[in-house]
Structure formats: structure tokens, C-alpha cells
Amino acid sequence: MPVRLRKFIGTILLIILVLGYALLATTIAVNALGASPWWVHLTYFLLTGLLWVLPAMGLIKWMAGPRQR
Image 1 (cartoon, rainbow, N blue to C red):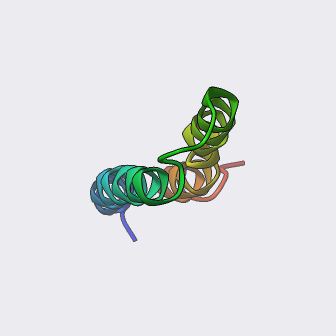
Image 2: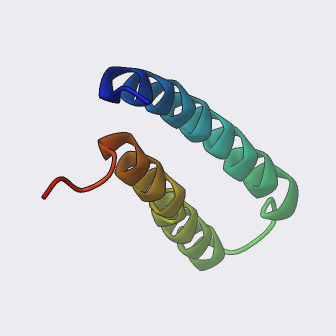
């Protein structure tokens, strides 16, 4: 697959990932953390704020293509 096409597809997928992840994380927070103390909110948003990086990192590595020697 050409690098330009791979980067285009990866960019679209990355945008979908970020929007979908933000919507899912916010929906879970609203439904599950309504009456929780502040430290539970802080922990949840700290973890979910960092967790999206893992699939994004894999996607970015895929976009870069195989290593050239």
C-alpha cells in the first residue's frame, strides 16, 4: 500500500478513534460517576486521558509503514 494512502486512511481512523473514545469516556463518566467523590473523577479522567494513546500509537506505527533499512 502506498505511504500516502496509508497515512490518509490512518488519519481518518485516528480522528474516528479520538472522537469515539471521547464520546465513550464521557458517557461512562456521566452515567457512572455522578455522585462519586472528586478523587474518583480525577483518577478516572487521568486514566482515560492517557489510555487512548495506546491504540493511537499502534495506528501511528502502522501509518509509518515498515522500517526501511
